Amino acid sequence: MATAAVLAFNMLIQGAPISPMWNPDAQSQDPTELLARTLQNRVGVALAIAAILALAFMRAGRRERMLGG
Image 1 (cartoon, one colour):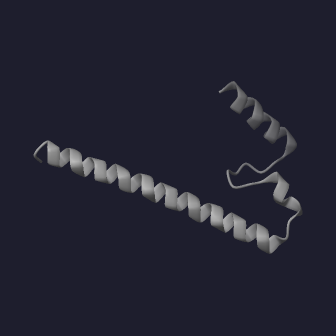
Image 2 (cartoon, rainbow, N blue to C red):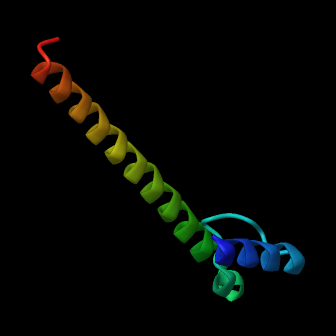
C-alpha cells in the first residue's frame, strides 16, 4: 500500500492523468491508433466486468437452489 501511495503522489506531482487506461509511452503515437487502443481497452474492461457479474449471479442462483429457495 505504501508503494501505491508513493506512485500516486509521484503522478500527482508530475501532472500525469489519473486513468487506468492511460499509457505514458503512447503519447508519441498516431491519434487514431491511440483512440483504437483506448477503445479496445475500455471494451475489454467492460467485458471483464460483465463476466465477473455473470459468474456472481450464477453462483447466487446455485446457492439459492442448494438452499431450497
